[in-house]
Amino acid sequence: MKPKPYVGHIEKATEKNKYFRKVLFTGKHSQLVVMCLKPKEEIGNEIHHDVDQFFRIEEGTARFVFNGKERRVAKDGDAVVVPAGTYHNVINASSDKPLKLYTIYSPPNHPEGTVHKTKAKAEAAEAAEHH
Image (cartoon, rainbow, N blue to C red; front, side):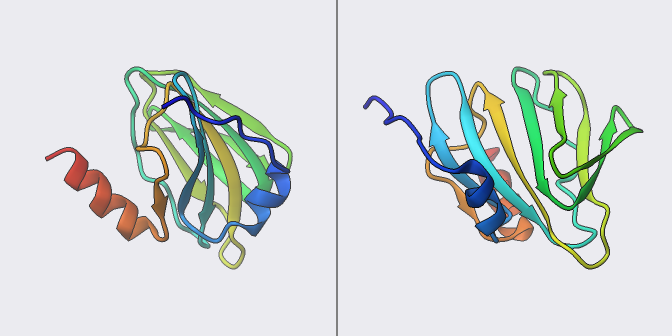
């Protein structure tokens, strides 16, 4: 089935999102996902061998780590692009405020319609996908 176009106010959708991960759109070549990391929470060190990933911070401050080296502190309005094959981690730098961001995977990285309300649920789902 052909995907329907996504049209929406991405800033508001990102700011309203309270889930760790929520897929908004999945196409043949890209995927749009909103994320919310709790204070000090991190995505975890990961690598996508065949996926480029774009991040845009809407609220809060993020620390980005690339191939084990901290490279960037990003805040509201900043964008970061992670090329395929790069180990990366995104960490909420705040001890009391959530980090709200959206990310675009190219090509898609999660099953269409994915919603992970918490990081623990995301990790459990990803472990099940790989076994």
